[in-house]
Image (cartoon, rainbow, N blue to C red; front, side):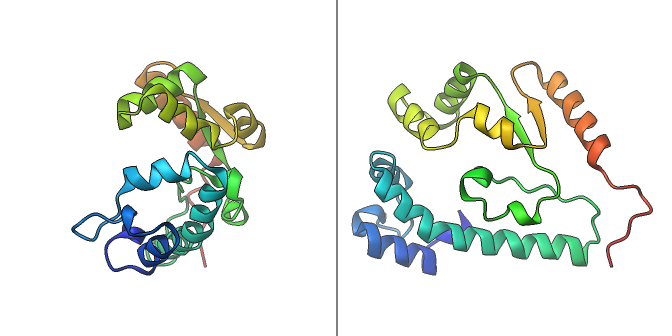
Length: 171
């Protein structure tokens, strides 16, 4: 969201590509309007991704370097929804983890979170790799169909397996 705040280069490029109809009167991005355009047309979505991904990757790289170098954190988690689709951040990931759920659960959660109807939610799901493809590409999979307690237990197991020993230092 930060990379498309008013008066940013990314927002300028989006406006130039998709027109002023995607800009609200206050100068911010009309996400709903942009979504209507890009989820109805794969070519438009590719244009969006070509614009956005470099800005997002740069922002994440800065945050990653800050966390590693200034805070000396031995473990950093990146939340990258299109990690396998774009592949751009894969080189900096020593371990990849997919949080997976059944397709029905995915649909219900997307509709509840964003207020989408079934068609809108399905368009977003269809624009990504399938959950099965993501799971096949991941080093670890956490299943998120059960309770929050079940999820937390699985996350603890994954963290214990991938967390570097306390003696590890980043130089």
